[in-house]
Length: 346
Image (cartoon, rainbow, N blue to C red):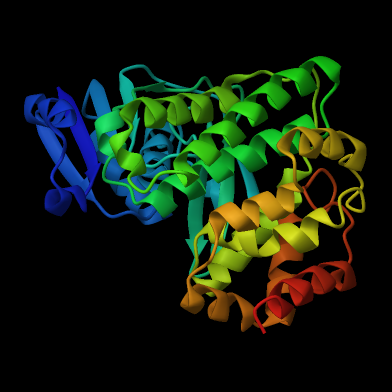
């Protein structure tokens, strides 16, 4: 028995023939919304448990929902993801075969990593990590990405740029070299997309971007690292939740105030970052804002008008503390970052 789970938006967009064949051959096809909360996960888990093979087709939230549903088959995850204040929850080890993830977006790499983001409140998300889990099988269909707008493709590849730059800036020599090489590929692909109006027509380029995104999640670092991109990513996580914008839009808004403080979070090296920027030919913050902008006026207005006190408190609640991304960051330190972010759009 085979189950095909897909983002319901594709009923209107029209699923490409290469993927439609998988849907047609499935015993059950289930359209789902592009969201991921615990109630949805538990409902889908009842279905996945009844099928030997599961194909999931959608963006990061849909793929995360299916991953969590599969994990929920082994052991009820509710007790693990419902308790505590931190933005990270760890669930027990376990996995199953027969699951294939097919992404419809570029950059997040959700199909290739063993984490998932779960909505646990109206404006709150939690990163769910599985102990010693192996990644599921995944497939890339470049024809799917032809439906993405040029800006969506650019934002996707910028996620890879930031991810590779972050790891390269704190890794040891060998890991730095590997991620610096991927950073070079990501910035080259970004410039290629930026230079054309119809990026979706170059399926070879889009396939390369998808493969690179997945590869960034598959490299096993030689030692445990705290990645400086974490502050940017998780400050952006809370800003995007409260302002109702994408995480990449929030990251673009925050990149200047965060990167000007590299090293002040207790990790990250301006020297390592400077080496990357030397190759890039401009500051990484300038590159990201130039390529990723201009942001939608409504999005910048919502980000600039977010209640900063609420934003700071929620960010600290989620991500500060021992072994968490923000460590001992103070409220005043975060408030200064968010104030500088908002001032860009005053």
